[in-house]
Image 1: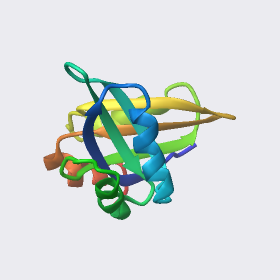
Image 2: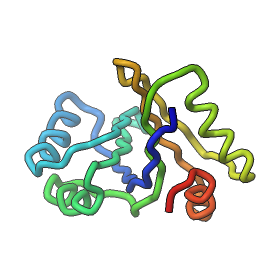
Image 3: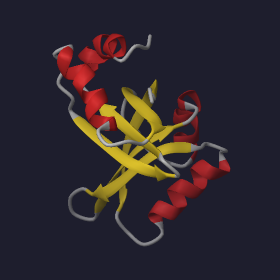
Image 4: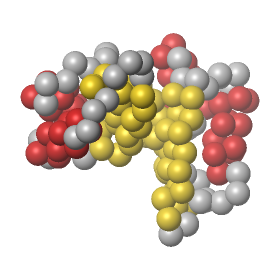
Length: 138
């Protein structure tokens, strides 16, 4: 029941919060053959929307985003956790970080269906190396 944990590259952007804009942006990333493993989109101020994106191939993301006309944030490192779902799966991972005295900034988790789950852990960039050690990855 041990989940797979990987370091991932996280980018943010702000787009107009209007009909079709999300479809345009995601369509451009699709056309660049960029697969997102995580996406959050939410209102961010007057007429704007914030997108938080993690691509399967993080190295190709900046080029694809530029081609789509996006101004993206600096790369941030996050952790993608996925595995067999069970009660307390996310709690077990967070406990490892707590035991290492690492404060997590944010967590997004979802059941993937068929007994699987996925989660993204965001934490201060100064804690990435220590967190990787606590989670058993390099």
